[in-house]
Length: 316
Image (cartoon, rainbow, N blue to C red; front, side, top):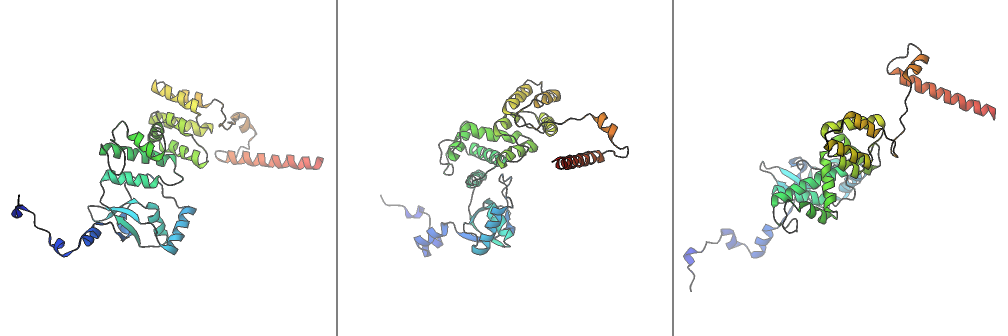
């Protein structure tokens, strides 16, 4: 049966005067130089851009060789660009006094952009728990929004029930571990910093498992715990955190209960030194008051220590 040519769409003018190869190349992604001042950071970017030795090394490399791997951006409605992958390269380029950075411009939905942003940063060797917490949550929500298989996730149907499993499978962690990290988003900033400190080998620090338990405390209870941590110079063990959570769930967690649990001796506790205030004041000069008392006591102890050392040297 002959085709009715009158109903067939007319070819575009460009198609009449371009080759198939030219039309294919026109649709390929290209690397273009974009002014750094025209690129905005990704909203709520969960990964910290830190000015450290690694950053300075990247700066020096860019000064000498330029940016070897283009950043990935998407164009915004106002004509500016939004960084998807390349925040550290952008910052290092600024340190290297570069005005532009090579970029690939890609048309992405919000959810696609989140998934690519998270996945590209999870390739780094050192990622803090707070970064994982925010990043996993963002990707979890993005997968839920998509609701079904996408070429970006390369996974079967993504539902509310298995989004965490998809994330875990892609990054080599269990579904439960993904949920543990996401629960850290419920911690107050001060306690979340202490979880990062555990990785950074700094004090005060809280390990992941007790931190997960503490994330179930109310905000008010967490701040009460923070006061106790500062006073006791100690953070909760896993067992103590479990008990704190149980009392919180029963709505019987009071400041007194927190103090009682936290006052228990444990391996990570620095012994708390207590003094009889009346006894100390009785030997202090009357003119020493307020904040000067601590300095006076410390200097007196230092002087006494030197005296003892000198006395021992004379006895030898």
